Image (tube, rainbow, N blue to C red):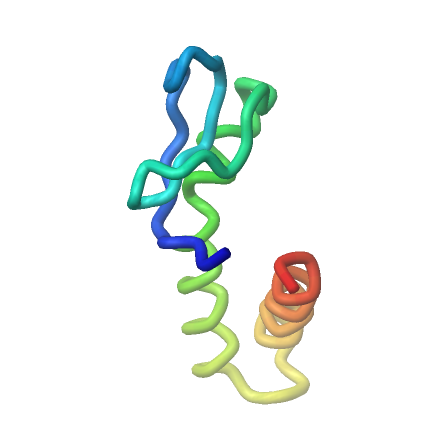
Length: 79
């Protein structure tokens, strides 16, 4: 299944509570802890910021390396 990003958090949808839906209103997750839903919805934006940081800072830079490690972990988790 191809996921259409960005996704959004909704307190209620399709008779379920605390859900994450993609841009095409397909259900990605339900019963998400209320504190994690908005964070999951912001993930594409956060990943884009990390990619910009990683691209602009050289290898060996502490912040750039941290961004690259975070991107690697996020990519593995999605695959």
